Image (tube, rainbow, N blue to C red; front, side, top):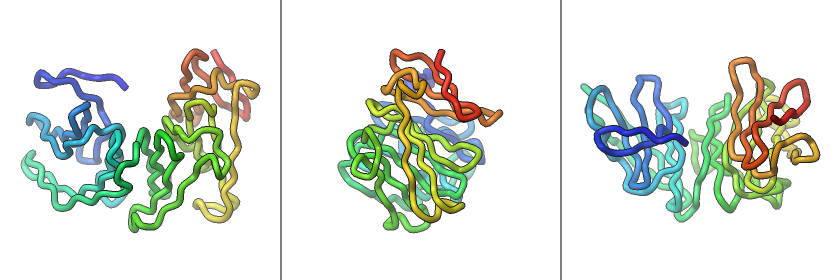
Length: 219
């Protein structure tokens, strides 16, 4: 991710909420930038990814200290943390995505991806190599217009997750794609859906791969 200088420090943009408060991270922790104020640190642990869910909670995945959920308010550009919850201590999170139904997909370095019900974080499942992935290192996650989930993995190419019923119900199917399918490299770092509903994957050493009309094209 790109880093940007601000107040003499360098940050990466993790996410933003619908009120244009920006959540930034660095190797020293997670910060919130409101209005013209200096970023305020809200988490001491190195943070790698974050999303704001449909209920306004901030979810932050850390480098090696698990997942945090914050309830916060911003008044007159001042930040108030109302509650902090800690899940999966010691887990190494590397990616996070909220799907169209509001579920949180949190990718890890070693254990695949956690699929979490944000309304009840104790209700979750884990998708890993034991359930069909070719790699448990999930670098980035995207969703296509049909509601399928796509994951860029390190060493396992691209994985597509589909469900037998709408709204993520029914059985889960995993299909993996590698270089023989047109992916530029099995070391996939980025997954992104553009405004035309085309999927793009960035790889290490294999360029960029586009998925459109059921075909992968790398260049």
